[in-house]
Image (cartoon, rainbow, N blue to C red):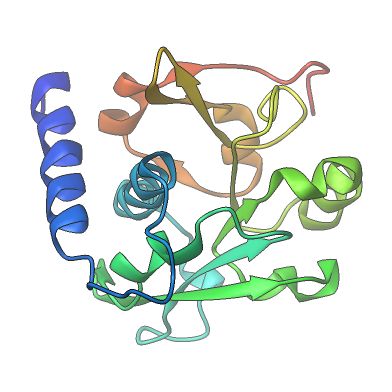
Length: 187
């Protein structure tokens, strides 16, 4: 698939997501930036393969965890419950590092920046796709970093860390990413 087709898929998914927002008056609408980032998280799930042992069974859900202060607000509502490779997408909010083993995708909020080395050390070797929008996240050992460049959300991928986690990232997704290595190469 060409880059243009993959970008078109991302744009269509974004348009569907934005058009499906409920008209809730109690909560402010999510920021455009985090609506886009929520769609990216959903699409990452579609282009990453986890080892079979990452799930207790074939019907187990794919769990997206948010660690720390949630920057998404209602933006994640649009992807909650959707199917990814036959698995229901479940969203959980975590406060404790000890609960990370139940996650398949872990969005690490900027509020956790001070604990980042501890978090990444705790999950090293686990099949968890780590995602954040912190500066230099992938250079510090994260897998995918969402970066905003001239009002557009882009992403960087640390393929080496993904490999260590036992995750296989589709070449279609890699073609759209900036490939980055750790500050200190891992063995």
